[in-house]
Image: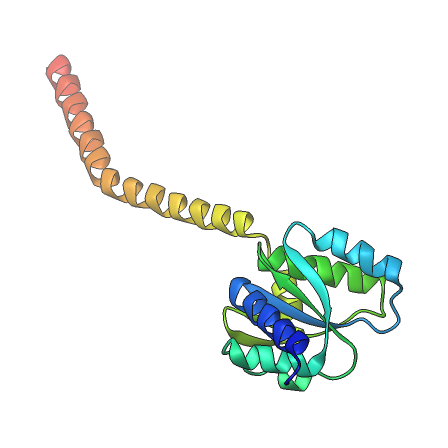
Length: 176
């Protein structure tokens, strides 16, 4: 790696690995330039998609402290560097791969941990972050409501018993 252009490419890839939340490694063999452009536009909100050289990517991943990508770096490779929501980016790649079977998801990295292609697909099957947070908030609200009901149930029951006794005494007093 004596050439300065290769050193600059490795440094750029290393920076992208360090700055991104996740990265998804794909094989793009068989896709046209127009299809690659369409994929880049589809991912533009959450990720950047770049064609990479395998040897330089392996060196950059090692420099960034990432392991487990060596097996996936075979054949023509491209990486989606995710800066936004990893779930949305994985969904975009999965949906594009369904429409264009030439795109093959080979694996990825999420928070420094290597992912297999199956794990990237599972990530794509998750609901968005906002939906998961809303579900968690709803579950917490339901538990708080249940707790409040339990705490007030005994006092409400005691109030009903006292009211029944009062009514019974009033009816006995009126009958006598």
